[in-house]
Image (cartoon, rainbow, N blue to C red; front, side, top):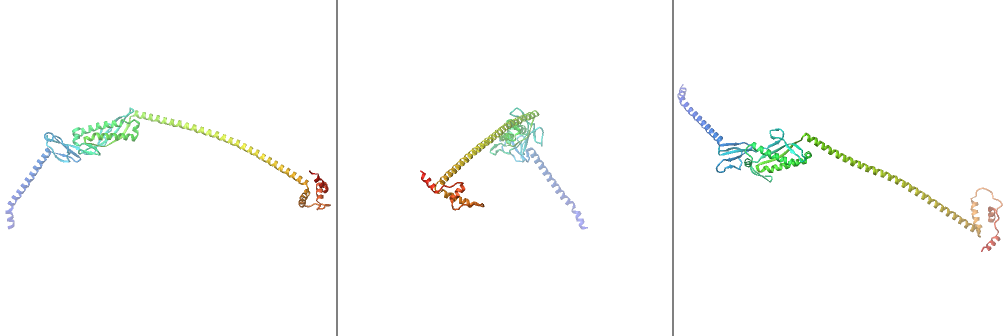
Length: 376
């Protein structure tokens, strides 16, 4: 009961303290809100936010430092006084300048390029230029370039001004470079890409002082008009027919040469065969003649030898002692005989043998001596 009475007695003072604390907190929060509001108004009036992916360029309207500042501003809150300073925002992302018949992928588009060729035709070309803006002036790959302030000063401060200027410059350079090709050379990837590289180099050199970095030039598609397609088809057909006729003529000429060589070879072979047969017959006849001559000479020599032998034999037989030779021959002859009967003949009487075989009487010894003395 006492505790309850004391609590009831202190309650009004405690409520007073809590009310003072709540009023202080409310006042502090209100002050913070006022300060924040004032800072927000000041920031809104005297500041500009440069977004991420962009740089800022400050421009002073009058007084000291009048004009564009060369130093770029980083993303974030930057001060700006209305009527005195202005901040322009230049994007740093990769951008695409597209030349085609329609919008593709949200890129900046225009009409396709009408490229006049050196042989008087027109080719519709779809191309794309990839570029970005430099964040500051400097040098890249040995090529000096400007910064965002140069872009704003010479081209303009809005995206529309940049796009129109870059489209015009890119179109002029692409037409100047690609118009050096003929209609047929558009079919050649090497010639086509070579002229695209020339255009990219020219764009890079021309736009670098303005702070524009040209990254790539892409030729995506090219189209011939219907009448050009027909003309190209006819021209290619004529060239193919001309090449075919040329090759056919060369083949016919080569075939004639082959036929001529074949016929000449056949005639030469026949002539060689005839010459060979004639030479063989000549050699054969000469060989036969030579053989007959040699046989005749041999027969003649044999006959002469036999005649000499007969003559020598007759001479021998006609001389003394010839009967002995005949007896020896007869003895050999008798030894070779087989069968038969010989009677009334002394085997050691050679004269009787000679007479018997010769069919006449042989000369006596007295006759042989007379014949020998009668010889000269």
